[in-house]
Length: 179
Image 1 (cartoon, rainbow, N blue to C red):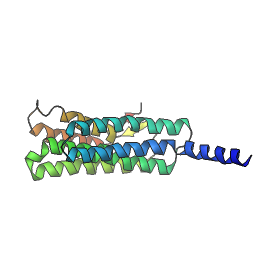
Image 2: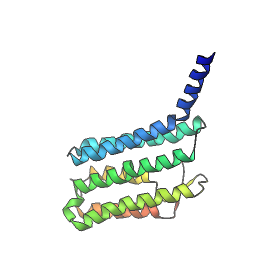
Image 3: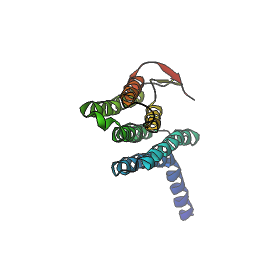
């Protein structure tokens, strides 16, 4: 009987951490994306960001389905999102094109990260009533990552504009209905 109780408790603890494990996998993919991108494999870096986005989509769904949402999970999700959808896409686009602009390229890459952090902080302290305020960082990060594929087709200045627009959309006050 004792072993059955221990097993049951272990299963309950594992189930309670399922969403957090998915969130940490999102973080790991973002971290790997950064390191792989720094080492020059931008295409794999891009793929890892999109895989992180898939995991980001599922962690909240799992938490709600298993009724295991928590303040810790919400904060962990934001910490993971700033890496996977703030830092990783900004470095990818910087490495791909914005480095050609010197200090302005650095500034707008860091500006994107800062706006993403602000957006996440605002999200964490406000009640969400079925709406997002501003563009979610996951969407902004995925759009910035997707823009990397357009580098051969658009003038370099376009990417500074893209990073500025995405940055301001994240901190703007428009509302967007959650899907």
